[in-house]
Length: 495
Ligand SMILES: [Mg+2]
Image (cartoon, rainbow, N blue to C red; front, top):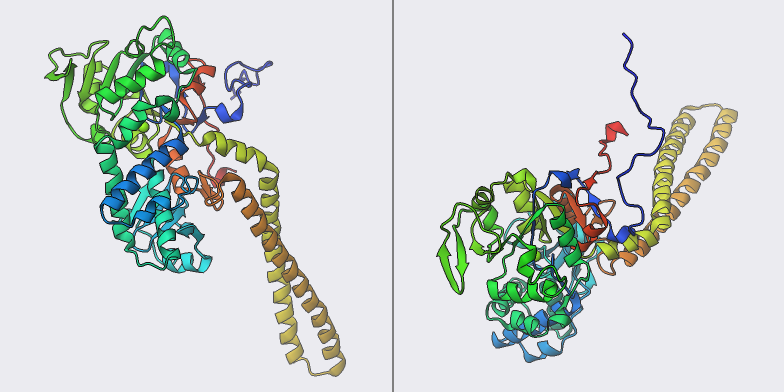
């Protein structure tokens, strides 16, 4: 039977795809195909998603507030004088509370590097502690740093451990971490941190000049927008007014950009539990009396099922944009059919480091290939050398034996040569890896990769975020009906 003639290849390139003018650092990266044309509702988280916090300023504030609380709990007053390195932590680190180590894992939960205070853990220590038996990172001994909020916890933990040990003082590592966590929570709860932020928003929050236009573009294409934040109403209202208040004439207040606003949502419980949704009437919270949510109103709490039912939408037509891998992305993906876009502020630095290292990364691949070939060759010459040894032992006549021995000397020289090359390749690989890591991050290397694999953080991004990008306004460069297509996924047998 004659196969039907396909119309491919097209004589001319077909439109769509990646708008080419977008610099790589501002692109949307695609793990799973996402058709914006199939999305009716787009939901946004607020903190670190719509609101881009200045990380060093926030870390400073959070560190200062926490140190005050620690001193009040009986820690020495000189903690206030300790230098804390806010550039030390990255997302995705794991704290070993028992030993006071901070660790970075690959996607298989294998630890490849770690620090105690600011000192790197030697390879042998890492091997003995974390590689010889299976890691249980979910156990109470460990704690994940998975939000930008939590970076200051790791900076404090390393800084305080280092300061105590320089002074030769004893320290309970588990207790220290618990105290830091409780002090930070307290500083959030009693308003120490949030009030300071609200009192000087321009210092702590970057106002993205393209945010309003991005939301407007979606609305013009017929999308409905909602805000779903854990922040409480007064904070949300002030923050959103700062971000969008007078950004466009068509929108008298920030509320006009969103059909629905839900505050104090209690994510991730929002996705898993069944708390009822309430309506804000002035300062009061009242039960909702209509079956549907009404445009322009503010709601509080609730849950995934109630929200979908009251919006009259199925989960696969909702796109949720958030920054928290666990609370926003992983939970919504696991508990619902929502499509997800993850905001990863660090992408701009990560992409630019990757660009700078491109030649070195290629060279690293070449060194890896060379190493494989040299190891093969070494096995071959070593086998020959052993074989000649056996034949020499078996040979009785002198001339035979002498020829074999001469041969063996030659082969031995070959073994030494290959060993030398292998050592040199390994030396160069280690140097090159270190210099590549340095350009990503002084202490931890790349955010999304670890030792040729995805990092455990990178793995979660790949698994749970349909798309990821550095900021919401990066979407402005794309069509509101964009078909985001993922690079084809190949298993090793397909390569
Ligand atoms: Mg957030």
